[in-house]
Image 1 (tube, rainbow, N blue to C red):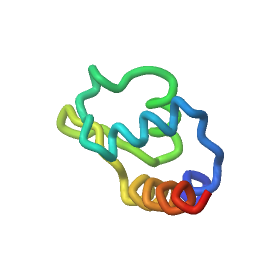
Image 2 (cartoon, one colour):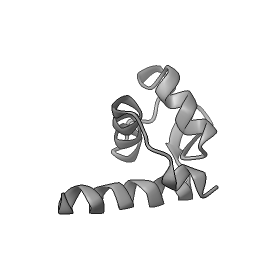
Image 3 (cartoon, rainbow, N blue to C red):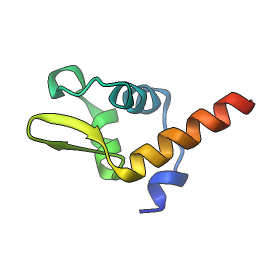
Image 4 (cartoon, rainbow, N blue to C red):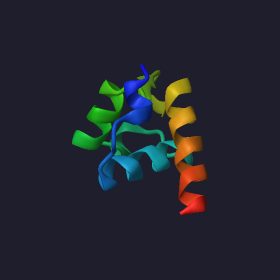
Length: 71
Protein backbone atom coordinates (compact mmCIF):
# COMPACT_ATOMS: atom_id res chain seq x y z
CA UNK A 1 0.00 0.00 0.00
CA UNK A 2 2.74 2.46 0.90
CA UNK A 3 4.07 2.14 -2.63
CA UNK A 4 1.15 4.24 -3.89
CA UNK A 5 2.33 7.09 -1.69
CA UNK A 6 5.97 6.91 -2.69
CA UNK A 7 6.20 5.96 -6.35
CA UNK A 8 6.66 8.91 -8.73
CA UNK A 9 3.72 9.58 -11.01
CA UNK A 10 3.99 10.70 -14.61
CA UNK A 11 2.40 14.05 -15.52
CA UNK A 12 -0.51 12.16 -17.13
CA UNK A 13 -1.02 10.07 -13.99
CA UNK A 14 -0.92 13.20 -11.81
CA UNK A 15 -3.50 14.83 -14.05
CA UNK A 16 -5.77 11.78 -13.89
CA UNK A 17 -5.47 11.70 -10.09
CA UNK A 18 -6.35 15.42 -9.92
CA UNK A 19 -9.33 14.92 -12.21
CA UNK A 20 -10.70 12.11 -10.04
CA UNK A 21 -10.12 14.16 -6.88
CA UNK A 22 -11.95 17.09 -8.46
CA UNK A 23 -15.02 15.06 -9.32
CA UNK A 24 -14.44 13.68 -12.81
CA UNK A 25 -15.59 10.16 -12.11
CA UNK A 26 -17.10 8.58 -15.22
CA UNK A 27 -14.88 5.93 -16.80
CA UNK A 28 -15.58 7.32 -20.29
CA UNK A 29 -13.81 10.55 -19.25
CA UNK A 30 -10.89 8.73 -17.62
CA UNK A 31 -9.34 6.00 -19.70
CA UNK A 32 -5.99 4.67 -20.67
CA UNK A 33 -2.70 3.70 -19.14
CA UNK A 34 -2.57 6.45 -16.47
CA UNK A 35 -5.88 5.32 -15.00
CA UNK A 36 -4.86 1.66 -15.08
CA UNK A 37 -1.61 2.45 -13.27
CA UNK A 38 -3.43 4.48 -10.61
CA UNK A 39 -5.69 1.46 -10.07
CA UNK A 40 -2.65 -0.82 -9.75
CA UNK A 41 -1.18 1.54 -7.16
CA UNK A 42 -4.51 1.44 -5.26
CA UNK A 43 -4.95 5.21 -5.59
CA UNK A 44 -8.29 4.97 -7.39
CA UNK A 45 -10.97 2.34 -7.82
CA UNK A 46 -14.07 1.88 -9.91
CA UNK A 47 -17.36 0.98 -8.27
CA UNK A 48 -20.91 1.25 -9.54
CA UNK A 49 -19.78 2.83 -12.79
CA UNK A 50 -17.76 5.60 -11.15
CA UNK A 51 -14.10 6.10 -10.44
CA UNK A 52 -13.13 7.58 -7.09
CA UNK A 53 -10.10 8.02 -4.87
CA UNK A 54 -9.30 5.34 -2.37
CA UNK A 55 -8.24 6.40 1.12
CA UNK A 56 -4.65 6.01 -0.06
CA UNK A 57 -5.41 8.11 -3.16
CA UNK A 58 -6.91 10.86 -1.02
CA UNK A 59 -3.80 10.79 1.18
CA UNK A 60 -1.55 10.98 -1.91
CA UNK A 61 -3.58 13.85 -3.38
CA UNK A 62 -3.47 15.80 -0.12
CA UNK A 63 0.29 15.27 0.12
CA UNK A 64 0.82 16.35 -3.49
CA UNK A 65 -1.11 19.57 -2.88
CA UNK A 66 0.98 20.29 0.21
CA UNK A 67 4.30 19.61 -1.50
CA UNK A 68 3.24 21.60 -4.58
CA UNK A 69 2.38 24.61 -2.44
CA UNK A 70 5.82 24.73 -0.89
CA UNK A 71 7.74 24.35 -4.14
